[in-house]
Length: 122
Image (cartoon, rainbow, N blue to C red; front, side, top):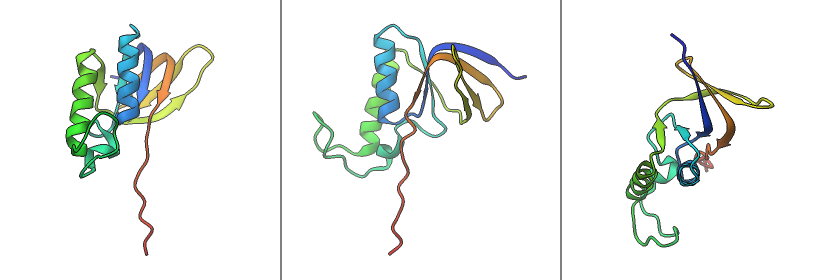
């Protein structure tokens, strides 16, 4: 059965940008839900070593992603491992459609979809 649920904020993408947005939403008393099709952390989670993140020295990408995830969860951010396959912008509510057919609506939509490594092929 297809479900439809309404939130204050929907965040698409569970990398550093999405998790940070979720923390700020929760701290601001905005109930947010974050959708990430894979494990949270994004591209940083597969980095061997992160040396350019302010305030954190010598940490693996996986460990940094775990810290970010725990931080977001400590504020009560709802994180759902679901793929967003469609986005519809509306005048009052924005909607996202999930791969499982469910719909989620919110007054605010944050896209933090990140990027993918592309090799040059030389």
